[in-house]
Length: 89
Image 1 (cartoon, rainbow, N blue to C red):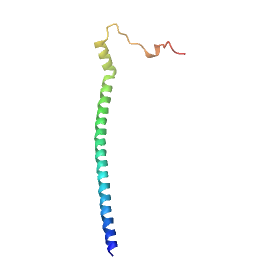
Image 2: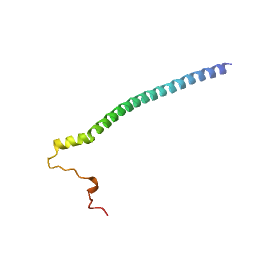
Image 3: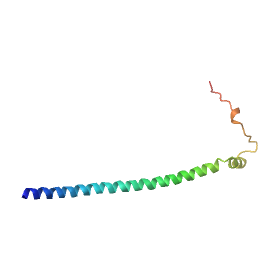
């Protein structure tokens, strides 16, 4: 009878310790998931901002305006199909 009580008591202590260990690990994982989720949200916002900026800066009107502002007046536009590469085989 005494051995049964000691065995049950040891099992309860072991189960409690195991539950505490699992709960601690799950809390650590939840914190890491939360941190990664916040980082993902920040990166998505940065990507959205960069896409908007790229769209704005690469629009034909903006390129024309920047070309007029920063390039010399003798600048002329070249058709891409007329470019010949010298190292082509």
